[in-house]
Amino acid sequence: MKTKAVRIYGVNELRLEEFELPEIREDEILAQVVSDSICMSSHKLAIQGAKHKRVRGDLTKHPAIIGHEFCGTIEKVGAKWADTFKAGDTFAIQPALNYPGPDGQGTLWAPGYSYEHIGGDATFIIIPHEVMEMHCLLEYPGDNFYLGSLAEPVSCIVGAFHAQYHTRAYHHDMGIVEGGSLALLAGVGPMGLGAIDYAIHNPRKPGRLVVTDIDDARLARAAQLLSVENAKKQGVELSFVNTKALTDPVAQLKGINGNKGYDDVFVFAPVKPVLELGDSLLGTDGCLNFFAGPTDPAFSANCNFYNVHYESHHLVGTSGGNTDDMKESLAMMARGELNPVFMVTHVGGLNAVAQTTIDLDKIPGGKKLIYTHKNLELTAIADFAEKGKTDTFYAKLAEICNQGLWNREAEQYVLHYAPEI
Image (cartoon, rainbow, N blue to C red; front, side, top):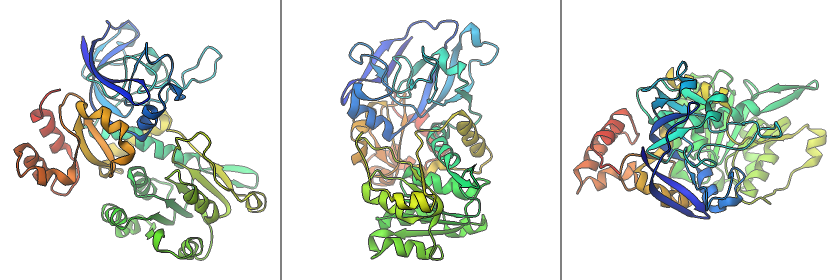
């Protein structure tokens, strides 16, 4: 079977190609990808090329399909998995396989980074045995594909919340402090919005949640999508703060918290002053989560080690979620407790993937959602109406997305009427 896919050959060398997939073996599965959400991690892969930690071999000889936030349907199942999966099943994938290598330790191999025949930015893929053996091929029971693509980024948020810890009487209590204080710095990007949503709606909630940024428009959008009033109904006191306007951010942010440091602080931008602000905001036994992944291997910032010793400050970082985090994300979305659709600000087709991935750090907005069988230039949802003045396709999408949010009807319209790649 032929597939079309975006593959990486080197630094910023991404090619949209058509090639033949081999016949699946008995321990493999053939699948169709319908949607993929472009992640900043794919941008880091593009700019690092073969130096990226998840690249498995010589990219010039074994190019990898990029994209790891994908959802689709199973086409054909190898004999080994015939009792577990069937054609027509809708799936999502946890890309962080942690597959044991020759030394018995978990590898960094992952779909979207390490494999020639599986990645999210493709029309058809072959799912290798490692994915099933590590229980990372997950049933997705939703009536849409876009939320299935968002399950992986949401799982990264879930995992980060679970990784927090506090050292009460020499015991590590895992998770944020229930009923405590939580600050999300640079927290109104797509992942920050997801973290606000999860903080408000997961069973282990903070009592106070403070979200910062330096852009009034982004803060206003966040406050509209995840309102102070709704948070209060869930028992959470939510505040949005523009730190650019603060003369003494540490004192003023602590002032919101009763002039005390915070139990948990998340940093969503790999920026030294933001990280150092987070360190300064910690209270006794406070846990700082460096959520944002830097591209510079030598990235560093100052840390107050006096407070590490005397105030029990500590630091944690996570890179992705695990399979349980992914299952939790899917279950909460299925129950309607999480609706991360507000992460999506742009929609495009497979033709838009290569340049979008390379330029991702320069494109404003949130998640860029790709429909892999379609030929569509990347377009902001906010621009549908303007584009619709001369294009009836976008005029209809603007009508469907009249609240500025992607939805199932919009997805169905694209799947039925957008041009094929």
